[in-house]
Length: 303
Image 1 (cartoon, rainbow, N blue to C red):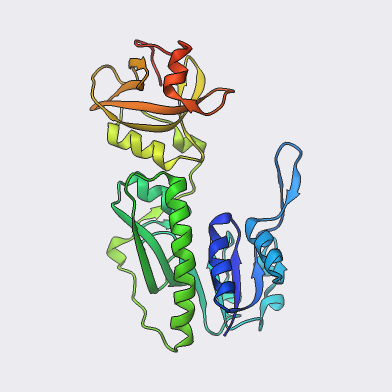
Image 2 (image 1 turned 135 degrees about the vertical axis):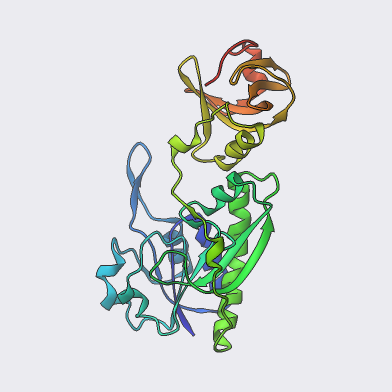
């Protein structure tokens, strides 16, 4: 069985490498075009393209795959996608007689869309996972081939993303096994359980101290390492990397203490203890070190 693999970010690299390592015949790899990166705007390939080149696989970085149906038609029996980043038209789907199968980082039908990992943390989910589903025109709506689960726990977005990336690699190899064996049994998604999530940006990362301590701590974990949760201190951005629920009471956003434990800030139902942060124009540091310089003290206001 020949496949085409489509993916772009680092999240998709383990799946590509796992398929290659399992001896799956990969006819080609599709990815997003090179993009300028950094202050010098150096044109840089996606992590998937770099991995494909390293593995000696043919790579196509079409800006719009829908304009290249002739180029991909007949390349392979199926296509596996993982965070590819482009909408697939009916003409593209029809290029693969065995179907197009997507590795999605949630337990569908929950969190269809662009930010499933962060959304699971924000919602306080106990479990999340990777779903392999058949791609249809409606985003993340297809029937389910298999699911792999993991605990969310107290993981940050970055930690959970890495774990799900490894699970996606396992799921990709298992999926090929099921598809090679013949007509697989598929499970329809429960329409009653559908939720959607949008792309997350810096605006979504602002901390509202009028919310509960649980919600604030989840937000901080969900935005670490990007786009990073933040608040304002005297009009300057204060990026918050880690925090935990604490005891205390006061006006929302009031700094209750600033010492070797960190920065304790009042919120709607108690307080949060900030333990790691990045001040405006500064570097990552322990909150206790920020306190040592007396850059923040009890009675200050964060908003």
